[in-house]
Length: 601
Image (cartoon, rainbow, N blue to C red; front, side):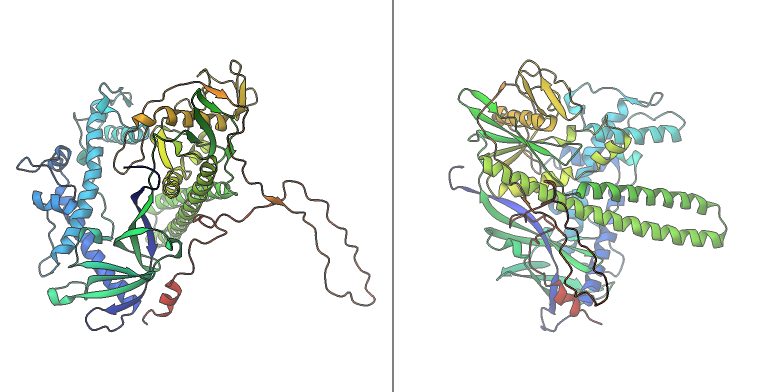
């Protein structure tokens, strides 16, 4: 039921680190370095067992069972991975003499089943694409049935695999192929999803912004019995930006190890205002732009039809897009250099090969560091963009935000470099952050088709002219002109309003409008979109030095600086809830500083 004041549950994720660790039975403190070591032993057992189980199940019959969704007795497979694996008899094997609790086996099978179920879709797509592949021309025939359609980016990747396999086999493919013919079993990540277990392995308690996790860890690399598994009680701080949020449930975290030690990837369920798509009469359309991350515009549904003032808002990424492009070029340069040194080391002398391998290791470390920087900037950029768009939609009274469907959006026609930069942008993270941020105020993010959004007129659906270049648009029939991205935002918002009664929902995906309907959008002289906040201008002048001039020294004449232009602005501080801003931190200092001082020596 939805209505005024109604709420709906939604899950969100956060990370934290333990700052205190004690033995659950004796209460003796345990050094955090010792905890990291014991968690590493647990992750090694899980990764080894998962790799063994994945390699054993890497055969076509496994994916046939998963695609059918039925067990040996023709019963529907449960959604829980460990329950489905137990029903099918898919259990990992451990080395002789190693004792592993059954709850750890649940964690292993749950992670392996999640991976195999994802790859079952890829197996079905490869089977369909291999039948339509022509080894002589390297082209794919168009699909004949609706079930054979796959995203274009996915099809291109499979086509490259098919071309490489045909080249290895001399230009011929042996009939229908499966995923097991195209690639080997995937690597199993070293992590422990405790959500698949019960209280016998781990349980969690939260009180007064402190989370206490009790988990059973091995005391040696190769535990031989039950006595070599002991419970450890970890205490971690809840991030400050969760204070005041209506959290209704805390879930068991996922344990991973990074450069700083144990990291807890936690999840929780909170209550947010329920969104009602049918009641929304104002929608915001977000267009992904090649010049910036995105632009937005508003369309309003009135009794006499749709209207818009065609005045949009363009996101200012504060130079983060330029920094991402620079880091991307740097990473590509490091990759090319490492590949070249690898070729030289193949036939080099042993001493030279040793030196080259050392250089390659350094280059790979630098590439990893660049990737970490890009990941952090992408997250910051995505959440800052999400906060700005959410505030823009809330100010306009919108209940729907329409974004372009990323599966149908391709970067092409702008040159190899610009296409690559657009493809590497933070769009996916921005969509996830936007859906998370908009749900806090009861706004729904809907995915709509992207084709023709910036090429067709919102009023008459005719092709738009480009009198002023790529970023301008003009319709001679409707007398509508403006920025190309803003007009695309009007089209996207229109499609969300027209298709709000035909929204399809799939688990783990955004609500989607599959068909782009058309209705004329008239230009309204009334101001319907909110005025973006303008930064406060400040004149920049050089202050005079306060140092007293020495006697006998001619003073320099200080000429005051010229009056600053309107472009020299001071950006205001983001709002309090902006978790992606670099000016405000989403939470106070974590307890990890205390944890670093408590690590055992």
